[in-house]
Image 1 (cartoon, rainbow, N blue to C red):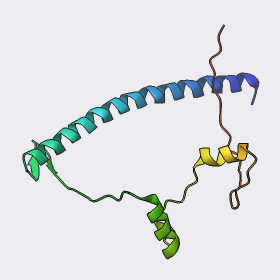
Image 2 (spheres, rainbow, N blue to C red; image 1 turned 90 degrees about the horizontal axis):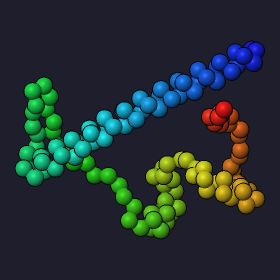
Image 3 (cartoon, rainbow, N blue to C red; image 1 turned 60 degrees about the vertical axis):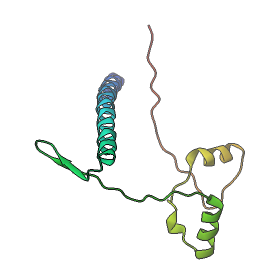
Length: 126
Protein backbone atom coordinates (compact mmCIF):
# COMPACT_ATOMS: atom_id res chain seq x y z
CA UNK A 1 0.00 0.00 0.00
CA UNK A 2 1.34 3.41 -0.93
CA UNK A 3 1.82 6.21 1.59
CA UNK A 4 -0.98 8.26 0.00
CA UNK A 5 -3.43 5.34 0.45
CA UNK A 6 -2.24 4.83 4.01
CA UNK A 7 -2.81 8.54 4.76
CA UNK A 8 -6.35 8.25 3.35
CA UNK A 9 -6.96 5.27 5.63
CA UNK A 10 -5.93 7.38 8.64
CA UNK A 11 -8.51 10.00 7.67
CA UNK A 12 -11.19 7.33 7.13
CA UNK A 13 -10.37 5.69 10.47
CA UNK A 14 -10.53 8.95 12.41
CA UNK A 15 -13.77 9.99 10.68
CA UNK A 16 -15.45 6.68 11.53
CA UNK A 17 -14.13 6.80 15.09
CA UNK A 18 -15.47 10.36 15.54
CA UNK A 19 -18.86 9.30 14.13
CA UNK A 20 -19.00 6.32 16.50
CA UNK A 21 -18.10 8.48 19.48
CA UNK A 22 -20.77 11.04 18.56
CA UNK A 23 -23.38 8.30 18.27
CA UNK A 24 -22.17 6.77 21.55
CA UNK A 25 -22.78 10.11 23.29
CA UNK A 26 -26.34 10.06 21.90
CA UNK A 27 -26.84 6.48 23.08
CA UNK A 28 -25.42 7.34 26.51
CA UNK A 29 -27.90 10.24 26.83
CA UNK A 30 -30.80 7.95 25.91
CA UNK A 31 -29.56 5.31 28.39
CA UNK A 32 -29.41 7.93 31.13
CA UNK A 33 -33.06 8.88 30.50
CA UNK A 34 -34.01 5.18 30.37
CA UNK A 35 -32.30 4.54 33.71
CA UNK A 36 -34.09 7.50 35.31
CA UNK A 37 -37.48 6.26 34.10
CA UNK A 38 -36.68 2.75 35.33
CA UNK A 39 -35.71 4.09 38.76
CA UNK A 40 -38.92 6.15 38.92
CA UNK A 41 -41.03 3.12 37.97
CA UNK A 42 -39.35 0.93 40.59
CA UNK A 43 -39.75 3.63 43.24
CA UNK A 44 -43.44 4.14 42.45
CA UNK A 45 -44.22 0.42 42.29
CA UNK A 46 -42.54 -0.07 45.68
CA UNK A 47 -44.16 3.03 47.21
CA UNK A 48 -47.61 2.12 45.98
CA UNK A 49 -47.07 -1.56 46.81
CA UNK A 50 -48.03 -2.54 43.27
CA UNK A 51 -46.44 -5.61 41.72
CA UNK A 52 -47.06 -4.72 38.09
CA UNK A 53 -48.50 -2.03 35.88
CA UNK A 54 -49.34 -1.86 32.21
CA UNK A 55 -48.94 0.83 29.60
CA UNK A 56 -50.69 0.93 26.25
CA UNK A 57 -48.45 -1.77 24.74
CA UNK A 58 -46.37 -3.31 27.53
CA UNK A 59 -46.50 -4.37 31.14
CA UNK A 60 -43.75 -4.18 33.74
CA UNK A 61 -43.53 -6.41 36.78
CA UNK A 62 -41.43 -5.55 39.83
CA UNK A 63 -38.95 -8.30 40.63
CA UNK A 64 -36.52 -8.27 43.54
CA UNK A 65 -33.42 -10.46 43.35
CA UNK A 66 -30.73 -11.03 45.96
CA UNK A 67 -27.23 -10.11 44.80
CA UNK A 68 -24.06 -11.10 46.68
CA UNK A 69 -21.98 -8.49 48.49
CA UNK A 70 -18.81 -9.22 50.44
CA UNK A 71 -19.04 -7.55 53.83
CA UNK A 72 -15.79 -9.00 55.17
CA UNK A 73 -13.26 -9.89 52.49
CA UNK A 74 -10.91 -11.55 54.98
CA UNK A 75 -13.63 -14.06 55.87
CA UNK A 76 -14.52 -14.57 52.21
CA UNK A 77 -10.89 -15.23 51.28
CA UNK A 78 -10.46 -17.61 54.22
CA UNK A 79 -13.57 -19.56 53.14
CA UNK A 80 -12.34 -19.71 49.54
CA UNK A 81 -8.91 -21.00 50.58
CA UNK A 82 -10.30 -23.47 53.13
CA UNK A 83 -12.88 -24.96 50.75
CA UNK A 84 -10.93 -24.46 47.52
CA UNK A 85 -13.93 -22.50 46.18
CA UNK A 86 -12.09 -20.29 43.71
CA UNK A 87 -15.13 -20.42 41.43
CA UNK A 88 -16.58 -17.69 43.66
CA UNK A 89 -14.10 -15.26 42.13
CA UNK A 90 -13.87 -13.94 38.60
CA UNK A 91 -10.77 -15.00 36.68
CA UNK A 92 -9.26 -11.73 35.65
CA UNK A 93 -6.09 -9.87 36.48
CA UNK A 94 -6.16 -6.24 37.51
CA UNK A 95 -4.02 -4.90 34.66
CA UNK A 96 -2.99 -1.67 36.38
CA UNK A 97 -1.87 -3.56 39.52
CA UNK A 98 0.18 -6.00 37.43
CA UNK A 99 1.69 -3.17 35.36
CA UNK A 100 2.63 -1.27 38.53
CA UNK A 101 4.50 -4.32 39.81
CA UNK A 102 6.21 -4.80 36.45
CA UNK A 103 7.35 -1.17 36.54
CA UNK A 104 8.94 -1.90 39.94
CA UNK A 105 10.75 -4.87 38.41
CA UNK A 106 8.64 -7.48 40.21
CA UNK A 107 7.93 -10.77 38.45
CA UNK A 108 4.61 -12.44 39.17
CA UNK A 109 4.65 -16.25 38.88
CA UNK A 110 2.22 -17.56 36.29
CA UNK A 111 1.73 -14.18 34.61
CA UNK A 112 3.12 -13.67 31.13
CA UNK A 113 3.19 -10.72 28.75
CA UNK A 114 1.84 -10.59 25.23
CA UNK A 115 2.01 -7.63 22.85
CA UNK A 116 -1.17 -5.76 21.90
CA UNK A 117 -0.97 -3.20 19.11
CA UNK A 118 -2.90 0.04 19.56
CA UNK A 119 -3.02 3.39 17.79
CA UNK A 120 -2.31 6.76 19.34
CA UNK A 121 -4.26 9.54 17.61
CA UNK A 122 -3.25 13.19 17.69
CA UNK A 123 -4.58 16.14 15.72
CA UNK A 124 -2.21 17.77 13.25
CA UNK A 125 -2.15 21.53 13.68
CA UNK A 126 -1.16 23.73 10.78
